[in-house]
Length: 151
Image 1 (spheres, rainbow, N blue to C red):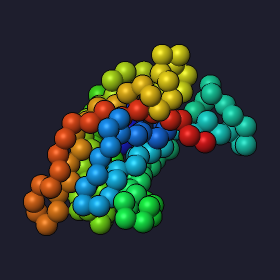
Image 2 (image 1 turned 30 degrees about the vertical axis):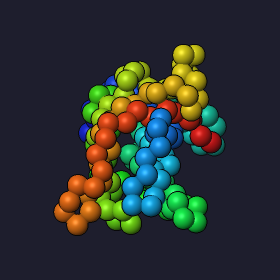
Image 3 (image 1 turned 90 degrees about the vertical axis):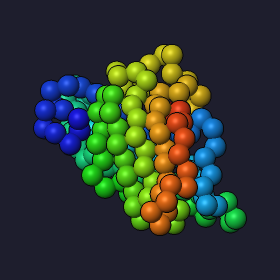
Image 4 (image 1 turned 120 degrees about the vertical axis):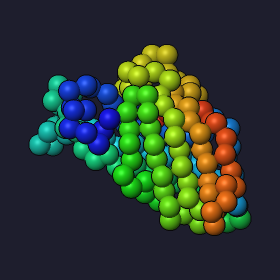
């Protein structure tokens, strides 16, 4: 898992943006995507795929308010990201506590480099998305997510 130093011994690159295959709207906000940042290929300003640096993990969540299309961004502090176990929790959103717990459908990662993964069309992650507000569960559903490598 990425929050353990032992992760560096197992190469796994899940970095990118994950979009729900089917729209998720809760309390007037659409879950647009979540982003994972775990590895940097930048070595003194040059791309170096032979010697990646393990960073973070840094995970963010993007919600879009449906009434005015305002984009709202939040962090997932203390994420756990492993090949088959991902646990994300963001507590400071306007819809409540957002949790995403699941795993990758392919434990190779590097989805940007796989010929059978079509950007924003091929599901690569599956997990339970739940939202708790004022101590009550207001949303819970297993969802699949597609992938985009981003910039």
